[in-house]
Image (cartoon, rainbow, N blue to C red):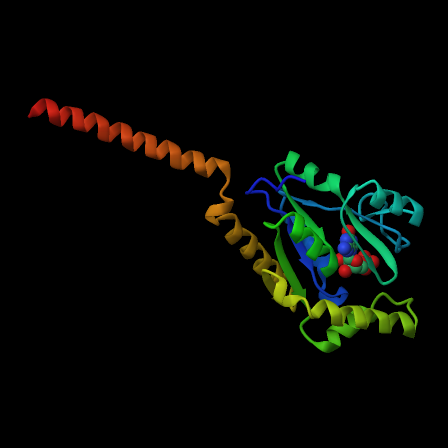
Length: 225
Ligand code: 5GP
């Protein structure tokens, strides 16, 4: 897989299920047309309101395994007993649109993605306190005590990965979180190593014009002497 064009680095939102990734991701997508959501493939059942092809590509286990075998996934992981993965084609599609791919994936997937796309920007979203983490872990309602414990164990192991991320944002207030993530993305876009080709061209044009002017004034000076 070739690396991303330097100015279209993939953006990963990760962190424990209770961190509010889905809400933050949806709000970001609503406001930024240069972000494209990475629709993952999964073997889990759709939740009420989820749309196949929009929220996830819902697949049977056999279909998912065929994607793995075909090398069609950029990364994949088992989360809470279900398989989740990012179709390789998502990245190319975003680049073709001149957009950043926005991924909402777990920490295992983030690790794999970093290995293939080292310039990916990784942001870890944290819940503001224990009560809200637990509320959000429980929030999905239908789960039994065993499922809830499993979610807590997953959250614990996710937290142990925070140091590997580029940024961590405590998601207390949605507006503040959005502002923070937007500021991070904006700052990263202005990194010299990630400059948009237009900016590089601007530097070239400015230098050429200056060189031209300097050359012309040197000739004039030489004539006067
Ligand atoms: P949920 O079932 O609640 O939508 O997602 C469970 C977890 O799987 C979340 O942490 C979510 O970020 C993660 N996840 C969703 N899609 C992918 C994917 O394509 N790859 C990986 N590694 N994790 C994913």
